Length: 329
View (cartoon, rainbow, N blue to C red):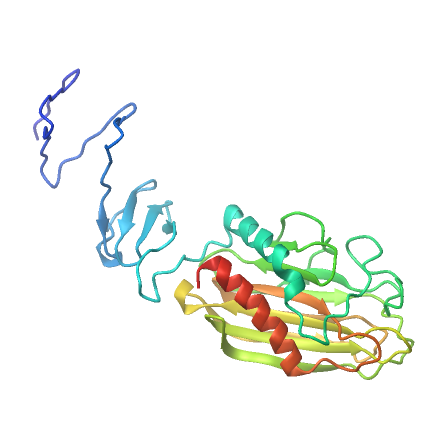
């Protein structure tokens, strides 16, 4: 193997080039600068199948299969950027577990949340107490209910605050979309990791054993909605028709897509709720890879009755339409 050591190499011809064998390495123990307004660096490119067989952490290339840049992080290839190709697979890859991707998603969805409820289910219940619950507001049913927890593999976090920033429970990132109607929160598990996680609620509804008998509805089961082809949703009608108090309903949803190499192997891994309308308990978990789960407290107003499957579908459809617009679906 030959070595050439020099202090500098200069070329004055505009087409000056240094040609190296395909097995050669150029090691720079310092900084490499490229100047000039019309200058550029062409990085290696190739298909997914042409990735280096023995990559090292820090390697970067352009993936022509996905039309995305990618870097090897020491254990796998992480992709970034927005795909420009025309095929359905050329979409932004799953990046919601990255802080920047998650924060941008939360910001976008927070700006959209008042547009999701269907006509007749958009009663704006009062949010009058600490941001982790509703506490006996004006005709709101609650005597201290709607405490919400993140769950993973059957264990629960403390009560979340809807005004709190991004938080983590047992590697699950989550955040509420603000303490105002409707109360909504989103959670995401680490990328490329199959995880069983979701939500639960607890507290005293104050229905005094009235307000109807709680029931549940399967809203979607392995459905395709707004470009997401792995959608499961479940609704619990907890209490309604109690004097002048508005109904209390819990909506849960898990979302993934084959475009993210994602899947939901069990969209209803855990579905449970208290049969007593005073008890605000319900729980939902799904088994997801490369996706997210979300929950919403919804209501159809005072003494109107339960929320139907079609009304819940409208909320899910509108939510996912907003999500798809942000995520590039």
